[in-house]
Figure: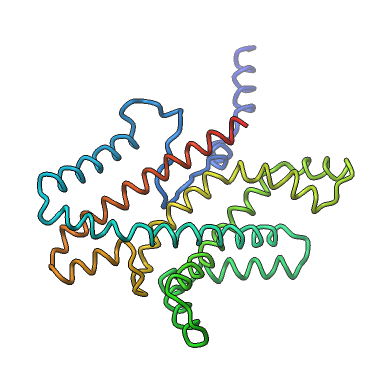
Length: 276
């Protein structure tokens, strides 16, 4: 009889399947898989992918110099433009994202509403459409260079996604942190700046790193407004030689290697933040 009662008690204590499944979270991103120290095997997915990409690029450029070596050096000239657009755009999107994230958790109704409209509006329009619209719309009123239009478009587009990341990060910090800071005599703004945001940055760093990598890949869209980035250089080479397959192979390998290197740098930064 005692064993029957204990069995019934275990069934009562065991949470239902629906409750267990509700606690599971699935994180999906279009950025690269960021490696970490828990995956410290010699042959992990990051190392295998990086070695294969680098080895293939070396083999093509050394053992088959015509046309792969020429393609490599031509497309490599577009790397500075790609990084220039991406770095300045990520800085702009961080500023917009922070303002938007603060707005979405703000108690001011108007700021909260404007932030929500901005997120819903921008996330519902493809980046390519935003890029073309901003380039030609600004061009009708101002003398705007292509690189400025590209930075503005990427900043506005990714600022909406960064806003959601900041909002989630701020809400992930326990509410007791804000209450304790106010109890110690800090104003709400001071508590947010000195207590909440430093903890938020540690939480959202992996997501920001993934957005940076995704932005680097999406920066290839700026080739449609004649910016001579990696993809544009490749397309120009194709128009002269008609070697589309060979050119796009090299372009893909360059983007892949850059993305993998950046994912490793983000992982190192994340580990450093955790150890502080």
